[in-house]
Image (cartoon, rainbow over all chains, first blue to last red; front, side, top):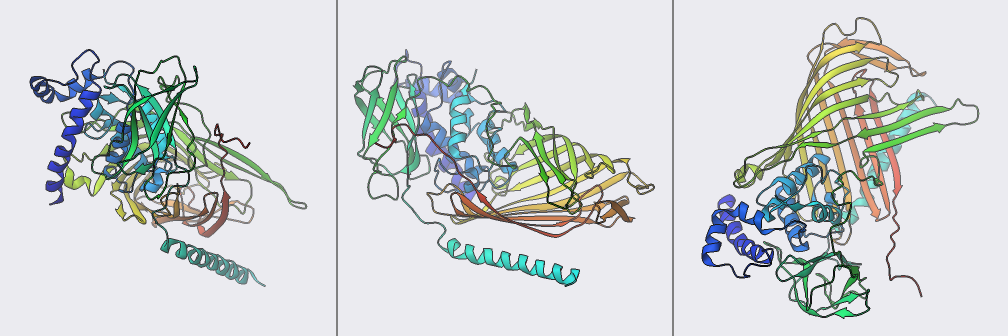
Length: 151
Length: 438
């Protein structure tokens, strides 16, 4: 069953990245290497820990936005082609506006692959401009400019 | 030459044109997707992130790169004319992929927020290339979030009617010896989020809800134009994504269900027949399928429309209320061109809907002066199908063909095998600092 194979692979693949993120976006005054106890507690309360880790006017990095696109596009019904920022959403299989709206819902609302994974929030209107002929760079810019740390 | 001969000839020409278009497309389809070296890769939107540890500049690369790289990065401070030494550069691989799409540049010392910096790179090799690009324009480093970033409603130019939220195109057609005809093609839609979506691990599920009032009108005083419907819409849109974490198997087939309930005022182009209906359509978004070269997407639709006639063209043509059950299908097919190209090479967009009339409604024909003539009243199912084909010859030129057949409410005047052909030229001029001719 493909679903049984993929689920553990995704979790194991993501774990180091989440850890790296916490180290990268952690508050400046705290130690760079969190203790084992701190890691255990942050794992137990993952969403709140991520939320606390980001401060007031932080933006998502290019690497994080690129990862959001790579994760959300195939899950929202698009294809697995390599991400090229100058290409349109239609080039990734988003032929109808309804499909673009679905992609927006994944980016805004999904806690595992969207901006929420990084402790950020986007308003429901943030990606309303997107259509099948919108380029990925426009979507990436909007995510980076409009996503704010979750309160 | 009688009317039938003319009609036969025009259909033959139209069919020949379709076959000709397919004949032109096929050779290109066969060489559609190739691994091309990107022609003008660039750095995109570097931003200074002092809150990451260590503080760094993160920058997108417009095209994928493979790692490791031996590129030389340069941070230029244009405020004092010095360069900032680079301590390290990382190219984070995307999870589950073999390539990177960004670079993280760590400077030796923190950047000053009141200075202006440019980031440039030399010697970076993009995927499918054997050598670095000859020139890569330096990109200005963003030191803070753009001022207008939180404005969700920024007015900007759209590329065409389909992309527009506001479209207004009145035209006057005249010729010597003929009466001028007036055409108005206008569209407006306003999209406001009422509820943000949330779903996934450890959070309660909620769909996205949007409020989308608007209109979509194309009317003409030319009697030879088809009697298009006029719609005023007050719909909601409810996007219900299928969560891939909790429903992994289902999400591979269906990605979302989109409901569009709303009140619709539908009228003929002269507003002689007006219906007020409540409509609800459910779009089942199936996961697309295909490969690198071709991708097919489909959206089966079911829905209903109920309401009453507000103004009738002819008396006694609506013996009962309006009640329709609808089902249909939208299919999109894209054939992709070389990886370096931004648009699909060839795309087909087909839309079919069948309205099953549960209560009788009238059908009208149009005479040569554009007046409606009652043909019948009954419950015969009414179909409507449109097919659009678009072929991007080069980046700036597209050939388009469209076919339409069917009957739309409220007057159900038949659009009988209408063919449309066109050539579209699209261009854009961009200013790039540093590329001025010497």
